[in-house]
Amino acid sequence: MNPEYTPVEPGFGGMQGAYERAKVVFVGIPMDCTSSYRSGARFGPSRIREASINMETYLPSLDVDVYETVNISDLGDLVLSSDLTKDGMSVTETVKKLIGDGKIPGLLGGEHTLTCFALRAFDDVYVLHFDAHRDLRDEYLGSRVNHATVMRRVLDRMKPEKLIQLGIRSSSKEEAEFAREKGIRTYTTEEILRSGTEIMKEVRRVVGSSPVYLTIDIDVLDPAFAPAVSTPEPGGLSTVDLLKLIRATGGLEIKGFDVVEVTPPFDSGNTAFAASKVIYEILGLLSTTPP
Ligand code: MN
Ligand code: MN
Image (cartoon, rainbow, N blue to C red):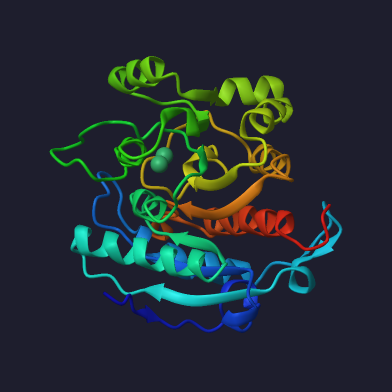
């Protein structure tokens, strides 16, 4: 099975370089078939790219210009069929190929469901999961694979101690019990607001030099900062809080990342710009000139 892509021009940040030389390779995954409330995440990749080309590639926080310090390529958008099983295999194949070629995949969502397929391509990684929600239901609205069960599906083939959830402020009772039972390391929004980037010291101690995958559901932000998401949850982090947290992951062995759930039909542009800013911050960390 050979995944196909719809090419986009310009790619993320307008920094389209040769695939062969690229360290980070972006792929848009316009997956949008299980949204339970507001759909439209299929437009996420193009709006995130649009925002990205209207932002500076120089990051004052790190004093690096990612245009000069990270080679980037953008394959365009993965062609999907709306058959979740088939589409999921395309996501896994895409990520496998990128990893095999020594690239760091940067996935632009798309609904969060794509993450369980992406992670099938990795043998063993810590997953730093930024989200308002745990996404740990075993089943939701009669289906076992969707945005509300995605991290549970990840745990079907990954040890619970490898999952770290950050920014959580919404959960069903079943999810809370499951997380407690499995001992899933959790940092709630409140704990993050109380302790700030201090919590990252603990995360770094746990993760050490092991490979890490970042999955960022943009609804981890308060709806004031990211209103255009599928399931808004008030009481969240500010964009600055999130950027500081991400910056504090510097030095971790990031092997891949995704930013998901941007739902443009509900956006004035803020959410896509917030997502793009988060990605620039990650690119800063992947820069060849370490901060
Ligand atoms: Mn969420
Ligand atoms: Mn999610």
